[in-house]
Image (cartoon, rainbow, N blue to C red; front, side):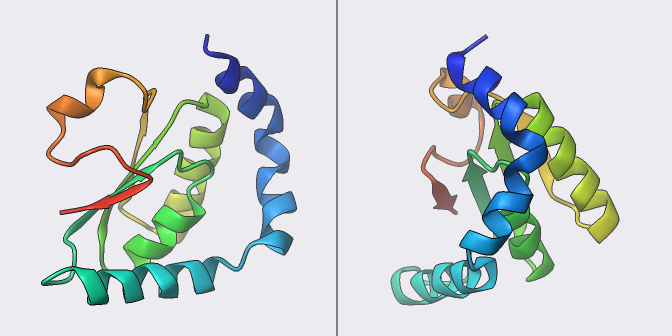
Length: 117
């Protein structure tokens, strides 16, 4: 087990409680979409959210019509993300993987915190 996985598994159940008050998720999504409009020739079809945690950004991006794949190492964070996606009826695909490994070469997108194609 990678050290980060153990830390985030223990932290998973508190993650949303802590960050909901600290982060403005809607502002983050508006910012990302402004970046997309400014630097991309067209609206991105697919977004890869690395270190997606409990999936809040991924689910909100999917709600706005993007196809999103969320990747995280923490089983517990992903379990929460999948539950949230089911409740939101969101089609986000959540994958357990280590973004530092070469698994990304098999995917049609490149590794980056948020990568678009």
